Amino acid sequence: MWGWGQLLSGGVGEVCNNGAQADLTEMPMTSANAKRPFAWLRLLKPKGQGANISVLFMVTGLIITGLFVLIALLAPLLQSWGILQDPTAALQNPVHQPPSAAHWLGTTRQGYDVLSRVLFGSRAAWQVVLLATAMSVFIGVPIGMVSGYLGGKLDRALLFFMDTIYTLPGLLLSVTLAFVVGRGVINAAIALSIAYIPQYYRVVRNHTVSVKTELFIEAAQAMGASTWVVLSRYLFLNVVQSIPVLFTLNAADAILILGGLGFLGLGLPEQTPEWGADIRQALDALPTGIWWTALFPGMALTLMVTGLSLVGEGLNELVNPLLRRENWQ
Image (cartoon, rainbow, N blue to C red; front, top):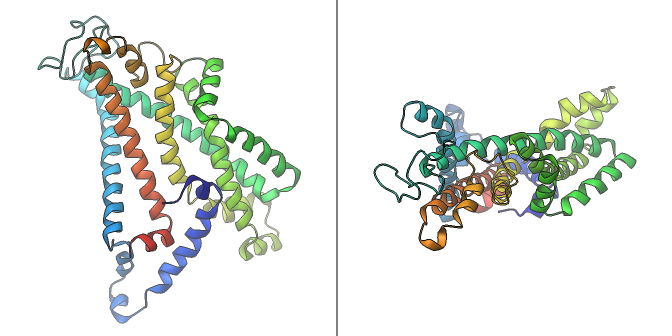
């Protein structure tokens, strides 16, 4: 798998272009292939032990991620049917009840049903994480394209500014911004997105610098295409191949940081179901043998991060034909 340094250095785009061409040209055009127009799909068929492991991890990540998406979508419906309790209503149940038939995952010190808190916590996590990563993409990608294409003093100034932000630890930067903007879904998303904008900027900027010297870009410029036309029609699709990979990996990292913010009391409002805040409240009772209030939110957070990480690594291999060919032989 490629490391973060290789991904941010802009090498993914070159591998995508060259590798895709190499894979398509290596398959001979025979009469059998002509009769089977989808014969190129055999290029995606795994070969060898390494391929089986990669596909297994990818499928596992998709199943875990899809399960959390399904939970986030169905949680309000299950509450309306009476299957789940209101996760924000305190003192409805006995305090610190262990897992039982009445409360499958037990209850907390405030009388919350742990199952309801865990399931609705996935909904809050998706809202914040998707909003934060989307904001990072919409800000970092256009700035990176403009900076890489125009160059000059603007490029140097933006590169220095983004590198300065990139050197700061993401959790420290998010905690500092959370102090400033306060609690809330949008505020937490803003605090998380600032740390990821430089990553998208660096990836897109490096790809743009390498692609803008290609012949088709020079031909478009010679025909009088404006900067907007070149950026939107000729450059955009050629520099965003690795964005889905970075998006999923950043989403996994954002869940961890959101859990850290909640643990520090800087995430979402007080009664909002949030895994980090629930773990913090469960620590006081943990030495007395009340283990379920901390275990299940921690397991949910770990599984969601693991699923997104596996999806990101699988996408990294799928969008890199050369890497796929090396691992699947």
